[in-house]
Amino acid sequence: MPRLSLALLFFLLSAASTADDLQIESIASGLEHPWSIAFLPDGRMLVTERAGRLRVIDADGQQLDNAISGVPEARVADQGGLMEVKLHPNFERNGWIYLSLAFTEPQGDGSAGTTRVVRGRIDGKHWVDNQIIFDAAPWRTQTVHYGGRMTFLDDHSLLISVGDGFDHREQAQKLDNHIGTIVRVHDDGRVPSDNPFVGKHCRQQNEEAWGEIFSYGHRNPQGLVFDVETGLIWSHEHGPSGGDELNLIKPGKNYGWPLATHGIDYSGARISPWKTRPDMVDPMIVWTPAIAPAGMSQYRGEMFPEWEGDLLIAGLVSRAIHRVRIDGETAEEVEILLDHLDRRLRDVQVGPDGALYVLTDEKKGEVLRVIP
Image (tube, rainbow, N blue to C red; front, top):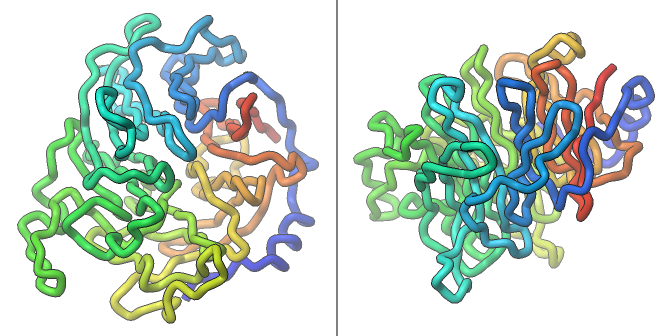
């Protein structure tokens, strides 16, 4: 059964926060709803802005005069735009940078779009060698619930989260589309032959399963982490009204949405009579009220040795960083950080120096550096 993180627990943990012991400095500002951060080997940072820009920021916070030119145009509306940035594990040899974005055809009317992943390289101040790695199907008209988080596995295959598009939640239980799934592709977009549904036919649904699918039954997964030491995959996703989840992802498993959920509809109506089902995987942690989990990372560093291996989750609604202790295949929320800032937090990553780097989700957002 999942551990319920209820309002009382939220306030008790907030009171016990070590926020007063942390030093916080703003190292970059004026970013338009920054979404994701990644670190180059030379210490510079890549930061995406949801408005469609990719920025390069020096370690001291100095930005390039202009954003990187030539980045694929994103469908910027509501929750859509330029989303995650990830470096290939062999970046120093091949230079590949991966971007996820909400996409619509430039020559179209903009009424339909999808979650797209591309890769390219940066040459000076320009994006070059652009390649499409993945397009989620089918396309849809809604401009929310894109998913868009990515993580590389140890074989350099890529996991990509795809949301349910809000109005298509029933499709998350089907295997003939990408809605409400986590997919796995090779770093060049090919489908791995050892994916769980390659060549499989789903008798219950009388359909051919799509080979890219790694797991399904998700709502809007916004955090994705591969633990390089244990080989475990962790993901979190937004519930509706309540019912945000942290899940341990395993290939071929069904994570329930919308047939099993701890949340209710925004109208107050019940979505499903089940919170758990024997044929579906229960979440490890459930947050009610919702925290709106966003970026997630795993702490590996020397600045906070007591956090080693813990998950760090940025909260948009909770306006905090949630620290989750991992013990084998179990998880427990143990601390809430930075809640005194009272700011929407979009991403949290561990820098090469072991500090935390946090993005604030604002019209004039910032990169915050957090040290002991």
